[in-house]
Image 1 (cartoon, helix red, strand yellow):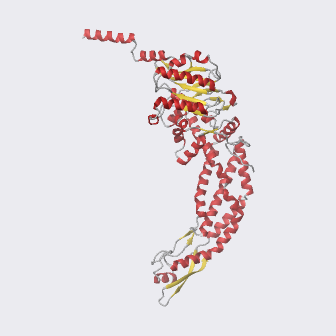
Image 2 (cartoon, rainbow, N blue to C red):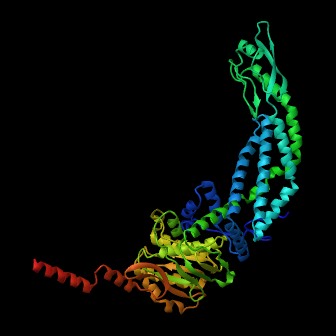
Image 3 (cartoon, rainbow, N blue to C red):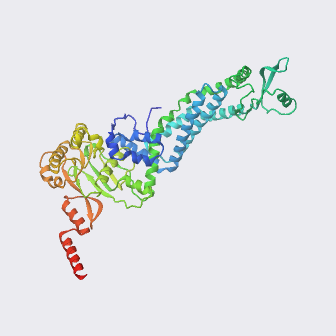
Length: 544
């Protein structure tokens, strides 16, 4: 059967761009994954997949189909989770099978258990997929693949052989020893007289003999698949020639059984590759994200399948979108109201100059847009009631840098270097997210540089959010848009209602002065309010 993947449709090879570490940090990707799984190995796997950003609509739609199937069937996810744990167990007992220090018969018994677990796993997944009305190309291929493996490997015969072989090994209940003595009745040699299907009766002559030969303290007793090791007063089997002789004798007499097991297992030698294990990272990715999305929807927040448009459109249309980290806060027990927003990217609104008050939600919204693209392009349901978008080829971010990283260039020099690097790598299909850039210099210098950057963004044609305190930058958009460019710049504001931050985002002219007026009125520091305060104070003093 052809090779296939749950991440790529037939005929499509990986063509992803890797997110820079700065973008992962600025979008809080690691913090989000910390909530999705507590297992460090799983977290590493999920992160490695999330940083690989595919922009092909065909690939993304394929992933959306697979994710939707896995999200729709919790029972299927549960069965697949059992499979992941089973395959992890197979790795453990597989090491025992290959361990040369383990007695051959126990290597073979472990091999039996390994094959039995693998057969159970494959047949369980096949049945789980048959029980669900899967629609995605990826899961239909997985069902066909698993069925093919089950049928070609003869799992029904394998199960019968395993049951028989395990029964044969479990019949070994005891070993009868023969001991040669010297003239002083001291044991000098030992050998195995027989391998028995019955336990030894510890009465009569045998107990008397063992009491007389106090040198032996334990006897090999193979009971229900376990072996008790012989110990002597003189030391361990490794140190005592007598015990070495006994160990060799045990191995020799069991060789017939070992050969019989190996002959039976030879027909299943091709199963050792365990081809299903190659799907573990992909299944883990879908399962963990589906579990998370289900918890979010159960908390009453919208999650939806993204509609993937062609890349040439450079569009995005979202209704009731929100930051996924707010959902995590709700799931963590915080009592907060999650504000949703409608948002779009288009030719007329391709570059947003975003302004608003401190702690008004500008950074949160900027991150929300980035995570919206990232989740959608991995096929995951997105935090919105509806989303349609043209995929981006990469996500570039410019957030305030750690002070320790600006020692050599200074903050402005470091910012300028990062902006230049973004323009050297970004294309018109990229998504650019700027959070308070050029805040390290004077207002006049920052505004001068910011105007040039925005003009360059229009020439590049990449969808952008330029989050800034420079309200004047958004007030001069007519001048900026007068120049030739692929996209137009627009003003985006975070609102204030009745002096309170509403966290609602609107396409509107900047309101820096009105923001200040609302806050001043709320706290009573307008000129009129301050005069009233002074008059009331004077009146109070005269009255006293």
